[in-house]
Amino acid sequence: MKTNKRNAWILSVAGSVTIVVAFSGRLHGQTTDVKPSDASSGPAKEWSVQVERIDPGQLDLTPSFQVAIYENLLQELNKTKRFKQVLREGDGKAGELPNLLILKTTVVKYTRGSETQRAVTTVSGATKLTVRSQLVTRKGRIVLERTVNGNVRFFGSNLRATHNLARNIAKVIEQSELRGSEPANAVLTGQLCDRRDVQAFVGCRR
Amino acid sequence: MYRLFVLRNDSGGIGRAQALISLGALLLCSGIGALAQSTALPLNGKTPFSIRAHHLLGLPNTKNDCKGTLSIQDNLLRFQQSGKPVAQVDIASVRHVFVGNESMQVGGLPMKIGKAAAPYGGGRVVSLFAHKKYDTLTVEYVDSDGALHGAIFQVTKGQGELVRNELLARGASSSPGEGRSTNQNTPGGTHEDK
Image (cartoon, rainbow over all chains, first blue to last red; front, side):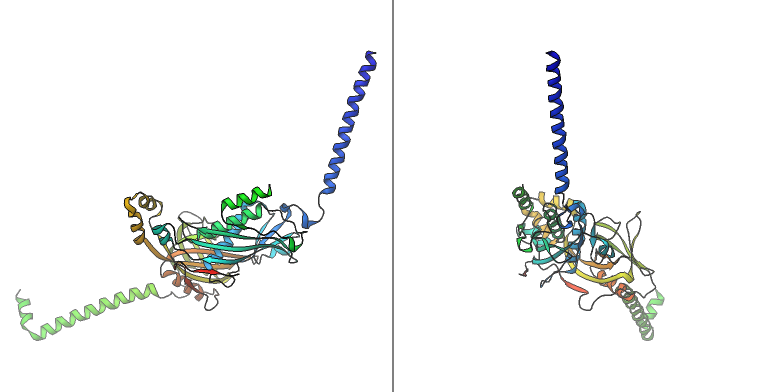
């Protein structure tokens, strides 16, 4: 009797182990099957991004602001580690990369500020920048489109607005899913004003 | 004494002394003029050119927001912090040079703290006067891969134009009409493009 019970117990343990192993193998297979083979819906880590120069649109945005946004964007995007490579406009290496997104930034609104006015009045003289950022594939499909703000209200020089703007754009891109397979009409559009809005946006996504 | 007395009484001597004084004044003025000209006019192509500058951002291997010496030598635009390696850009690779005006509060953090601590809003009154104007020099250039870079420097008012002229004289390209940017210091203007 004792031997039978022991055998039954061993058999049940062996059976359960077999079932667990079999299911885990199946699940593992499933996950590998589910892994997208299409580059357009692959993880963002495989994407590289090329930052285009800032388009001032019809606005009288000074060249130093355009260059500052461009350079700050490159720095902030590198910090996010979201992309395999962050390239500059005109970089010859871009042609060799298979998964390349192009970041287009157009200035929508710009309010000139004054550091002195901010220091004297506290409430006025803010420098404000609003841009429309688009991540586009080589074929022109829009992967991500956002309107992002950057401003300097109290302390700091006017150029600090460009740093804040670039940081906000990088944050938005970092916290967004990049789905190249989505139709262009289904692009999400949001407006981010400051850090709290970015956090709210993340909260919505969670 | 006697000599002076004689000079005073001698009309020819007085005329000579006046002529000497006038000549001296003329030489002094022209010397000052020449000095002023030497700082205002761009130097010729071979002369090294060097000014103090504040690197705001953009140069490779250089910290943002640091002070150093901006120089032009042997067709290279160089920026060096004291005791740090030189960052340099080939002037032939410079695509655009822009000069703009800005205004900033002086004194840095200590001044800010002092102004905040001043009673009865005294800090605000200080802020009204504690600002200075400067030029921003924006240089767009391409590297060996053709990638676009931009560097921004803050220089003393008036020197931005000098550096720009010097760069143009040495082969940098800049589209007409876009070299001098608008004044960035005018507050309150809002532009919208929808």
